[in-house]
Image (cartoon, rainbow, N blue to C red; front, side, top):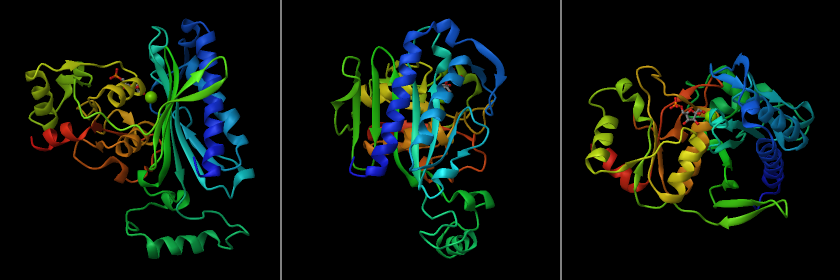
Length: 333
Ligand code: F6P
Ligand code: MG
């Protein structure tokens, strides 16, 4: 990575992932997956491993001086680091996606994305601007000024287009880290004897083959009738395509990246805004998919990275990840 600040941030993320991988592999899966009698801000039951994973990231990331603030699925609000108030990066992460799959020994993983603030946001000597000056500047320069809320002025981030790097770490038979920037998307495998992530595939591009389709088809009774989505699924079935659904987004998306196929989590009558969370599940996977030659849209055909940065940190979204062939078929319906 040519940007030294991003490099340092990635080192902190790697360190967190290794610690989490060791914790997951060395503890009783039934202990890790026991509920802790609370629900998080997205109304999911919190498991012991969710808290452990979140604590690991929270103890390691603040040590990196380039991180201004962080938010995770398990946090109600972001944490900002006063010592890093001039830092330019903000990180959103799902500490352990698919944690319900721990007790049956199925792959889970951490998902992250790194935003770079497009504007300086604090009073500081470096840029000699105070918050009001910055606000005025945004009002003049920002084409979306009317739609940006007060909160977003504070945060400065407009949308998923402000992501500069995203990735995930898989905890399965192997511990693997995928890191994606606009320049390159690379997959690394953790070598237990050296303690290092070693390059496995560099410059990944999405396979343009579609052996599988991937959706929780058990929810078809909740889908909207006669939608583009239902027509697409009927087409998959008519063609005799195999269905795959692990139930850990991170593992399902990884399969599509390595073996081809799609990942579809549409809205439905139970979750009219979609089920997965925009900031730390939907944005990062969309950023990765676009970088490797795929398409990431909501189920009403909006490019996900253009969706405005949410007012609610835990906002949900639909997500459809396609390679070009699938996307063209979907759009033709
Ligand atoms: O983080 C939410 C999650 O665990 C995803 O990893 C996964 O795709 C989804 O929930 C599965 O939920 P359901 O079984 O309700 O489809
Ligand atoms: Mg998750």
